[in-house]
Length: 324
Image 1 (tube, rainbow, N blue to C red):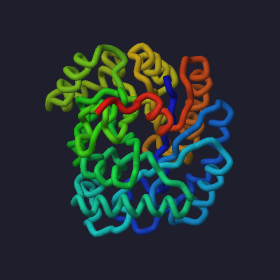
Image 2: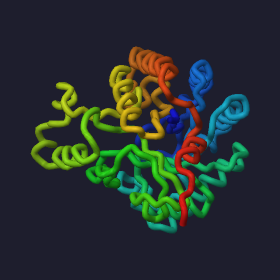
Image 3: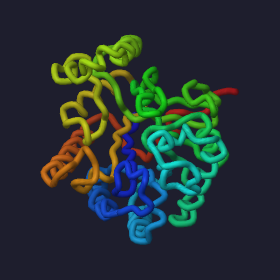
């Protein structure tokens, strides 16, 4: 069973759809983060946005980490700052799945070429910004030779913010054939490794029933999911130190092991490394708590039957092609 860490490695300006220039201060914390990973034998996958590759200092830091450490560099697309920018910058168009097919393709091609030219690597992994992934993007990625996607957020429905509905999906990885991103296919050309998000109790059938219930208007108005979380009843947890504490992450990991999920996928944003850049880490105290949670969880992971790996290695290791 593999343990992977996927980091949305991005510019400072959270949700800055209307900006034309971007800060990159959080990237200065990447070497410190990598040192922590090295301490615990973890090999992360950094999924990188276009503005970082266009900024000399950020690109230099990423290049040094890549050359010195055991890590992987992949793609993370924020459509509002990935050229060509031909669309209106707004929330709807911030989901790449909402853009015309040709524009999606051009943006992904530009990001792929920029990463290859700047860091000298051919990326094979991808995550869509804001989880805004769809079949047209998958087709474009397949053409580029991309093998692994990690844009599916299980049990989540983003339609309320113009995004895709993954509420019927589980955390289990699978092969698929674009553009059918939700349909497992043993001989598919690409592999989906979802972020690890799951309920702490119940089988897949019960989780689907509860997800549909929580999406109804009245439970949403009454904030039933938040009430369940506080009471520890049918609790949904993200395997991320941004939103979960250490006991929650441990409980979710134990569930993944019991459910025989072949990959545990911890995920977070690089902006969480520096206070004030995201809703998850607002001040220095929260920044310290974030790093302490991450360190304590990684220390615990070493005691579990988990093998650290970069995203592409884990994906290929558990999703070998089946017969056509």
